[in-house]
Length: 173
Image (cartoon, rainbow, N blue to C red; front, top):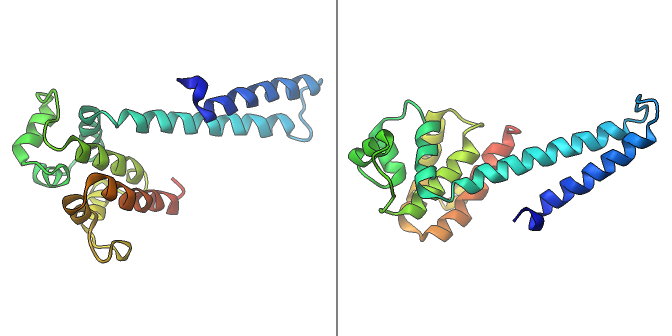
């Protein structure tokens, strides 16, 4: 699986490049910062692979639900239920870990987790919940939760992921 990943391939290429630059820098002073340049690029690639791996884990609905619960501490069960599209009792069961599978709308749970993933470093938990409720001009005045509630999940994902990533990017997260 990693063989086909372009980031992993670039990481391998950069590691070989680092070896060449280290060998060319006989005294280890790196006066033109050629070694540091490649080392910094490798660090960026590793961080990108880590984010990709974390994000891909959210494709599993039970993992996604636990991620949201973990990253939105202090948010009450009714509000979490609104995000997941379930009642507070179901949220309590998910928090307690008694839910082994997500039967009701697992695609929604995955989308909510992916959006929380993108928003969590740019906003407080309360801010994340507000993001879902606040109307947006990019959505013709609708709130993200309205889009999730009334569009098919693929359309909702196509509309909401860029907005969430944009919020993350505004703060450089």
